[in-house]
Amino acid sequence: MQNAFCSPGGYLERIGFSIADAPAVIAKVRLLCEAARQAGLTVVHLQNGFSKDRHEAPPGAPIFHKSNALRYMRAHPQTAGQILTHGTWDYDFVDGLAPCEGDLVIAKSRDSGFAGTSLDSDLRGRDIRTLIVCGIACNVGVESTIRAAYHLDYFALLVSDATLPAGPSFIRAATEHNVETFFGWVADTQAVVLALRP
Image (cartoon, rainbow, N blue to C red; front, top):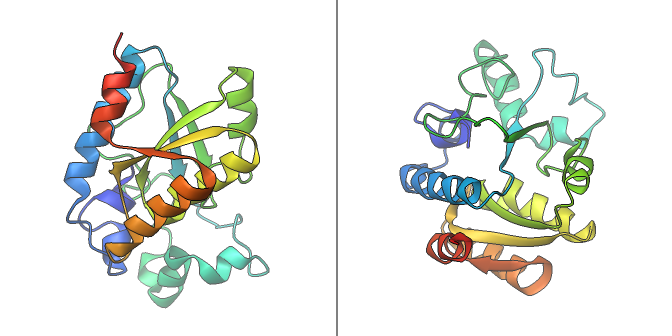
């Protein structure tokens, strides 16, 4: 839930994706975080981006070629170091969703929150085996994280209305189908918030 993906002028909008529904998603994610904290759950923030020298994405890695952010910066050299780069506005969390004391913040440079991060060990160290997953984009980082979670034997729940696809609206339905059929479970924000109440 970074400016890059949710805010006007952020990376996702710059490369041509609609973020018109982002304010509604931000509100749902805020409700989920508040309900999770009140229930005593650990809130984890995945923060996607690269170092200024982009050493996480060398030319020999697929991400160098497939990352829209990296391709955009190469095509628009004046934006190098401004898009999804540590320490920039684009990299920061949106207003109202900054991590609170006790939350975990996991920096990542790949779509999955598990790839090259301490997420798995941080969760296992807290005896966490069930994940409630939301965010932007549902068909990229969210789905990649849920798929990886499944293969690591986590139970993952996608919160359908607390996500936003990068691309046409039918992608949301495809992601929900993939998760529900193969990798986890799907519910909406209201159902999750009600389930978390004492």
